Length: 340
Ligand code: SF4
Image (cartoon, rainbow, N blue to C red; front, side, top):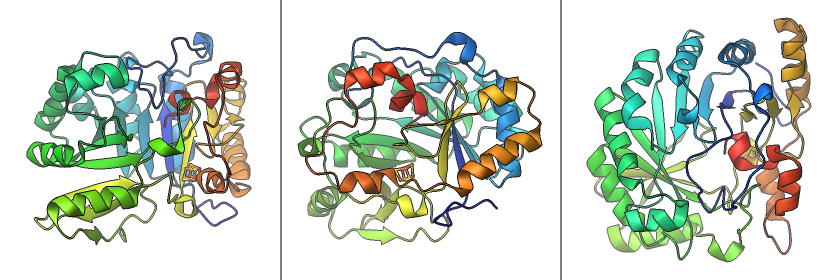
């Protein structure tokens, strides 16, 4: 197993298959115009699978497909089949659900094990404002189709923003319970792309728990001993319903972070907040062997010192991580490019 300077293993790889998205969520893609990765730079499925194989050979046990919106990539089940053949412990995908209804069965059949669907609101009119989309019904249909296809349990990700959707915490818990899903509330993060971020809009884990305890009664933490690197802390309501909170803004968990991110153009980031990534596409396309790639990856990970979210905690006058000009100068700084 390859470990970094804080003894964190190279355990989990998030693979962005496209930087395109069919939503414009205000916490991720609030602008009118974006600079996209050049088409010729986008890795083919075979190139992604080859890199994934090298990562798995170095100890990665969890692969997650992300985007942008991964289902915008044509014929994604073919990539899932290639990755499934690597026999990795966990093969998952995060999607906004818009295109899931039609593809859920094929993805499950191809070997995808788990699905996380972003669901920030249960109100169609609110989604229009929050994500500039009137396709709320498609997201709900996608969740239902995923369940029917055999994905269980489905996770629902909700980015909680004060004054936007923070009045829906218990509604989302109830919805998840009925759907046989588990909701995970994510604190609004000041990552690249969140150009409208401000500390006032963050609803902390502590505040969420206080509000939910007022409604439901005492809330108990659920042990994470079986997956200590999981970003969500899980909790149990008195009636047994479980939910998670990802407190990446107010209580970051960098010390157990085993995650890295591969962009659709083959740039490998060791942290969501990393300024620079490592170009794996160039060696991949210029004849590097698997051993060469493994050496490159091992050297970078063993030197890793990143703990971006923890470092952000000490920033006085915290605001958006990047201004729009800096994002346009390098689209890999965008969360939608490096896979959230
Ligand atoms: S900020 Fe970086 S090191 Fe910290 S949890 Fe996120 S990806 Fe991992």
